[in-house]
Amino acid sequence: MDRRGDSDSRPTPRAGPVRSCGVKLVAVIAATAACLAVSDSDGGATRTDRAVRGGGVNAMPSMRPWRYVGANPDGWWCQPGKCKGVADGTAYFNRELPLMRAVGAQVVRVEFPWALIEPRRNRFDWRRADAIVQAARRVHLALQPVLVYSPPWAAPGANSPPSATAFSGFARALARRYRGRIRTYELWNEPDLQRYWSGTERQYVQRILIPGYRAIRSGDPHARVVLGGPSKADHDWLEGIYCYGGGKAFDIAAFHDYASGPFVISDARVVASVLADHGQRAKPIWLGEYGYPDSDPSSPHQIPLIEQVLTQPGPIHRGGS
Picture 1 (cartoon, rainbow, N blue to C red):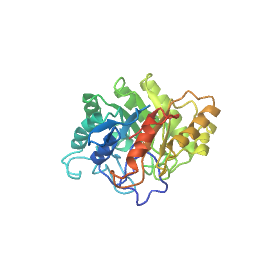
Picture 2: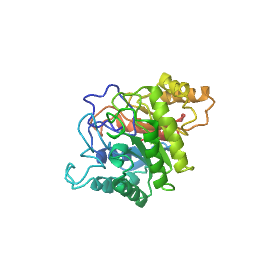
Picture 3: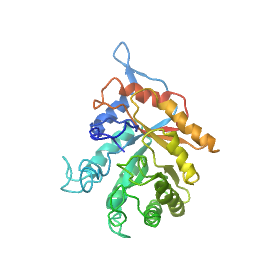
Picture 4: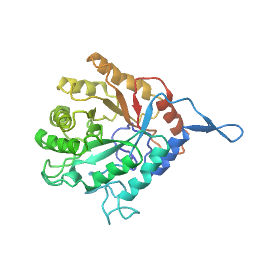
């Protein structure tokens, strides 16, 4: 999901809502806000080009199973006594959600880690998820939960394929609980990368995408399902989704893009071409994550990229941040 702090071992660059590696979220939000205005010759502020699409913000990852056990100590899911610099993870989202709202974000893409919500089969701990949902509603921000990470009872590792039955049970319970409060769910994060998904693409489609889609729609018939955003606009990987029968198991296509240059819109056209080839031209495309691989949020590369994503015409319907 969010690449910050992961540049040491990322196998390929990616895209994401306007993010920077190794930077705290508050600093990233400041950079995002900067795209809304530029200084004129008198030191005042003038508007940039009008945005042609809405934007969102990614929350800090819930877990980093390749680095440590349990919740991310500097993320929204960290538990009392196990967080960095705060007493409890609620302090993070209670501080950050109003800032996200202040810069005009419409949606927050946030991991809802299966491993932390259902630590034992059919035994759910909804406390942190409930708190996040309530906090987002207070500031009128929509949530886009990313269902990710297998619990130990369901698979050998957090990135290992669970059974379709186990995952669909979690997805259905989540959709039922938040019916009418959460409208959109994303099924896994970057399933094209070994770090997040150690199984095959066929297993992703047959154990996560198809059963997850059916489970969510049974739990909330009005909810929409987002394809788990791959790390890049990979034509062959997207074709594989259709090859393995997953073409009707998502309402919104998604991809990530950390391509270190002005290629986001052209990459989106790759995704659009695959949808069109399968008669799904009308499906929206969301850019789940994007950013320039630079640890400095004030980098001269960041603001032009944000402006490009939000203002340039193209097949992207929503840009992350």
